[in-house]
Image 1 (cartoon, rainbow, N blue to C red):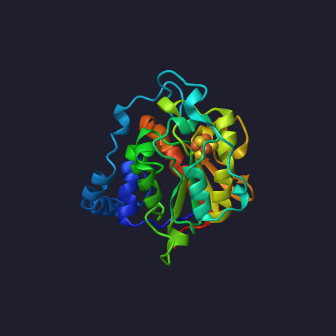
Image 2: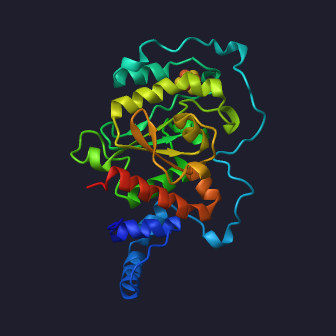
Length: 281
Ligand code: SF4
């Protein structure tokens, strides 16, 4: 597939550690141009040099730290998930998530993290669960991992800033949500019953957005969407399906920050997604 990239996108790919082939003379000219545009990119997403970072001992999309509270405290006052999620509109769905107490994670959240971006987008990114920063800010994929995701998306012409009421919201926008809307304490792994309770909200978000492609990022997002226990490494490079929508599997940006050599694979995954969904206008 031939992918036309402008200087800004090439500079962002350089920040990701992805090298693009180009004829020698052309590459030299583009490299000089990319240097001129580098200052704003570095400000947006500083990424350390790949050669100095050793590979991780084992792939782990999100760190597990501290004691793992397995169940909600007695004071959590759990309740059933609101009925009719499958037919809710956006305001009703957002309100249902904000007030949800269907699993024990409600006891630990600052706020539920619903989703962000264009609700008319062709592309949807699905992550795992809010971390500390997301829990505080109420947005998925913030902090360094969020910046890396934004740079990855910018490299293929997408932006979470493209709002639903702009003409390019469908082609250039992206909607970003997590499988779990509330933060697991200590960034522990989600538990199956928590994922099962929360999945109908994501299912409704996908039905409302009607994306042309879903980029599933991280082990729990992938395994939840595809109902599998296979590792990401064995699921990459193929087109999967979630309720009729093509799904491309890739690594979580938080993992890529710790495993810089895997960025090239993430770029391959983005290229496959582009091939399936078509390049943004
Ligand atoms: S994680 Fe999902 S199911 Fe659990 S309380 Fe939060 S919104 Fe409800």
